[in-house]
Amino acid sequence: MSSYNDPGNNHGAPNQEFTNNNGGYTPPSGNIPPVRPLPPKNSNHGCLLAVIFSLGFMAIIVFGGVMLINTGADFMSSVIDNASAMAITERETPYIEEKLGGEDTTNRIAIIQVTGPIFGSGNSYYGTGMLYNLSCQLKHVAKDKTVKAVILHIDSPGGGLSASDIIYNEVEKLKKTGKKVIVYVGQLCASGGYYIAAPADYIVASPTALVGSFGVIMQHVEVTGLLEKIGVVVNPLKSTDSKDIGSPFKKMTPEEKEYFDHILTAFHQRFIGIISKGRKLPLEQVAKLADGKVYLASEARDYGLIDEVGYFQSSLDEAKKSCTTDFPEIFTYKRQLSFMDFFAAQSDSQFPSIKEFLNENSGTELNLLYPGIQHNNGE
Image (cartoon, rainbow, N blue to C red; front, side, top):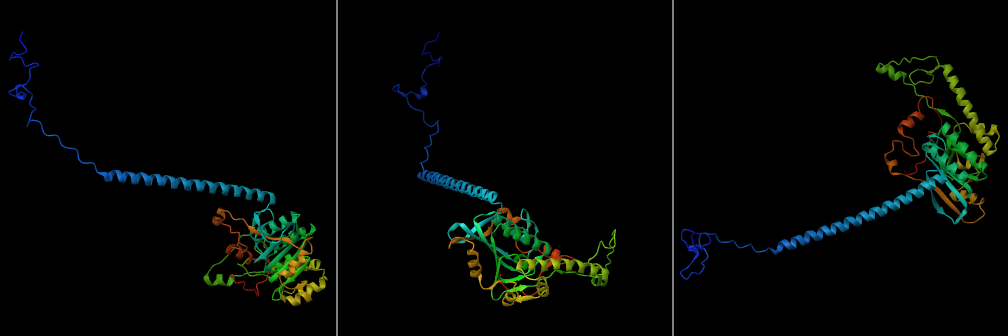
């Protein structure tokens, strides 16, 4: 067995290369590469991290605040929408009331505006245009027991026969509730406009207003001459000879004209009867006035077509006579628009669309419309 100091045995023996003459340990040199020193710490990195952290924290606060505000706004909007929906359900109208003055909410006066051509479709429950708007409002005030009087502010040249007649019927039903109906004419109350006004208890017209044009008109267009020039021939296939009566693609025969005269006369007589009943005038007197002309306000008063030449205050004073207070609440209706109304294909405008206007004024459409002089209202 070899000993610890045996030169042939290196296990556990100290390496001579690392031993000095005195037997001490000498660290190796040259064989092991020197250790690189760590780079110095950059203090700017810490500042940058602090700034990033601060900005992030501020962004979180701002974003959270915006979300909180939006949530609150959405909540309030929801509350308002729900309240509006409840109001619509209770009042059965898509309109909201706009207060104009007064204090007594148990004695109220409603102002309903009839501005522009009278067109549309439907009734007081559904529809479009002025026909639906007015029918809906008239139906609502008829049910409101706090409303003692209604002022119809009319500035209209008239419009469709059926539209005017349906609105007239709503005015008649309103009167049967015992509410007083007053009409104020600011500029023009012609044809279908007066058809609506005739049942009123009291009519006031401004000194510069025009009233009248009692009659029925049918705008018939014939384009046979134009079609011949451009070489177009229209040959309708029909089951009976009268199926295309009034068509713009054929000349009107004397028999066809007589047929339309019969229709126009029937509705003209109905118009005369409505005026006679509403204004309590003899049929013969109204028939003489119903020649299509419009009258000055002073002439209309002399003929018994209106009660007073004055301004809006006169109609308001007349309406107040139905109230038991000197300060009744006065309000009008304002349409409640939703976001989707801006994208709806059917506009709620009082004026008809181009398509609707052409439908109402071509072919054999019957109208109570005055196409003559109209005031410029600056719009």
